Length: 173
Image (cartoon, helix red, strand yellow):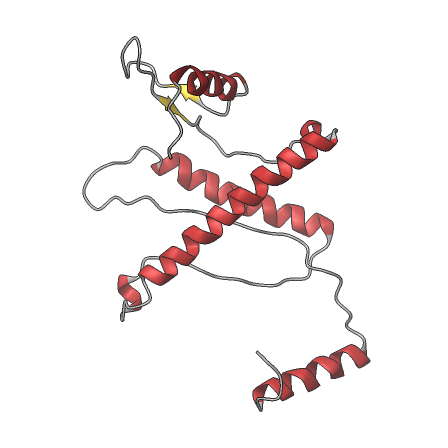
């Protein structure tokens, strides 16, 4: 059985989100009883340090972040499923790329700022564009440290041996 819609409860939650600048009322839209809301311009930062002070804040932050990335992952998988049968890469308008690089903390900061600047430049330039041929694109960047990597000779040989075993079908891929 579906739960009853309660406008007062929904309105309360929308006002609470607006109080924290997570949404804002769209001026000039709706009526006296109907309000339209939108997400403010700009990027969204998750996991604010002040929210992680208490156990409840840590849990709430964790739930929001995990749900965000779960939905993001589902969106990507849906795109991959929907485009699996497109035979010509020229018809597939997407860039899906992964690289691994060894960086110092200063180099990471330089790279992260450069990537964010490029994204911000294009988002600001084309955010409100409309018209024929205009589509919305998700623009995503993840730059994070990988677990410690053992590059000793013993570890390198073990990885080579495991890789060779996979190629001949001895280990799962």
